[in-house]
Image (cartoon, rainbow over all chains, first blue to last red; front, side):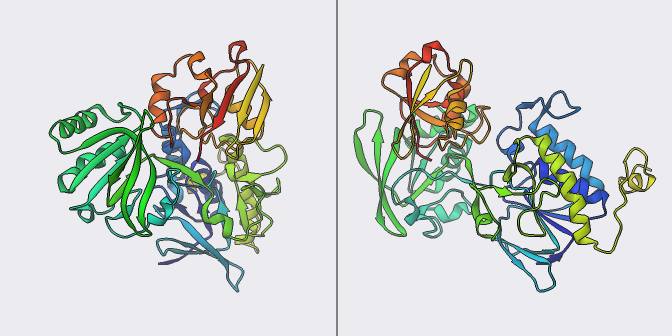
Length: 344
Length: 102
């Protein structure tokens, strides 16, 4: 799928969302890409329930509420979201525009790219087990997987799951009926998962359908691509071999910069240096706003990102509409802006 | 008050603690490679450290929220803590921590 638009925004966190508003006031249309399956970035992934106290005008707001309000605020501008997709390549076209590709095959052609990627993209945490990467992408149902796409591919396998959260327990419960054997390991005899899941797991354990060990995976064994087993270590440091076709670690997500590092944008310590008048990187047409950018005096605050989005939008306008005059207006007094917002 | 810290490469640092600051903040400002993605909200488990030399037992016990969040950390050991939840004070003077693997 190839799309032409004004601005492609990488990252649908609070700053990427507010950028839609500032760009929208200037009649610039946006497409947003995010590796997560919903908007909000860190606000919804890490702390949806935690209160934020330093958003101007909102004495207290949770991460999720802030995102909900931003979505409401940008609704008039009809932003197009591409969730569950990672921006993987960026190339310059002969007409001066950019072509941004995602791992799902989406191609967005736009004169302006805005990187609002926070600290990067959320990716599954990989346990620090030597050689574990050799068993990733081994094929359906075998080797190391950080997500379950098709349950059926795990039928008849000796499955080992590590972790103590909801994902770990949900997959123990759901995959146990079709596994040849199901083993769960966790570093303590307690779980942060929902109580009914914990109860279900304990019932399966009592019925002999799930084995549970307070242990951790120390080594993985087998030929590259074909896992045969792991070495487990218990709390008293005793180690034993455990046969497994499949190892599913569920330790949540962490943030890695990811493919942005290969876009040819100048980086300094994994951040994008920008000027503070335009918030443009050293590559014309590519902007960086929010936690991903760096400049003298930078503070990683949501409110700073909002300011950066407003200035970026002014500069982006001149790139997208080089022959038009930018009319600076206030939403309180401009009937033209109010029409765009759908309030007059 | 001092904090002795060991990074993932095994290099040792002696950092100046500040009363009321979290150990995570001292490590971060001391230049150690510690993600602390959530900024100290006990919401991400990326400031995971091991507390060494008998200091684990000397600290106040972790909260239920911290114990839960440690379930999302990798390579958890009996002396694992989230450094954003350890508060510097006179009683932590000389504490030793090792940054856990990513």
